[in-house]
Length: 174
Image (cartoon, rainbow, N blue to C red; front, top):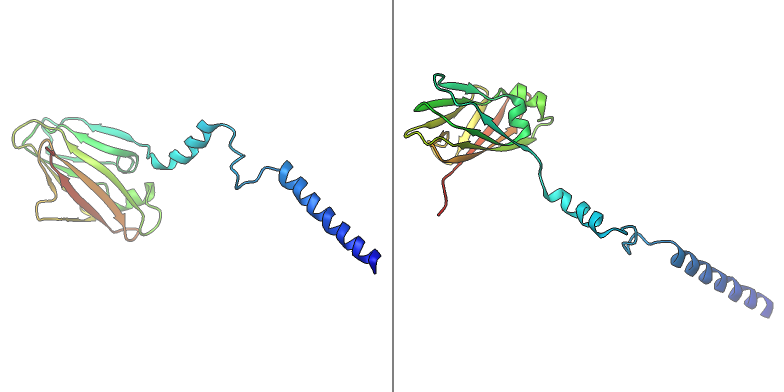
C-alpha cells in the first residue's frame, strides 16, 4: 500500500514539474510575449482605426451643366471635390448596377464619401441626382449643395438594382 502511495505521489510530482517546465519555456499567448517589437505591436492595434482612401477632384465644367461620377470614383474615394464654374450644375451618381459591380457585393453593404462643392462662384449650387438610387435626406433641399459646403453621401445597397443614397449637407462651423 505504501508503495502505491509513493508511486502516486511521484507521478503527481512529475506531472507538476513537467507542467512547470513547459509553462516556463514556452511563451504564453496571453502574456503578450509574441510581440517583441513594441512599434509593430502598436501598429497592429492602430491599423483598424485608420481608413485609407483618396481624394478625387473633378474638372471644372465651364459649359457643361451635368457630370456623372463613375463607380470607381464613388467606391475608391473618401472625398470628391468639384469646383463648379456655372451657376447651377448637376452631379449624377453612378447607377446602382455599376456600384454593385464595383464594391457593394451584398445587400446591406454601403460606401460613403464626402462631396465638397469648393466653388467660390456666387450661386454655384451642385444638385446631386440619380435615376436608380432613391435619394433621402433630412430635408427637401438635401440634394442641393451650396458653394463652400460639403455633404456626406452614403450609398446603401438594398438589391442588385436598387438602393438608397443618404445625403447629409454640412456647412462651415464657427
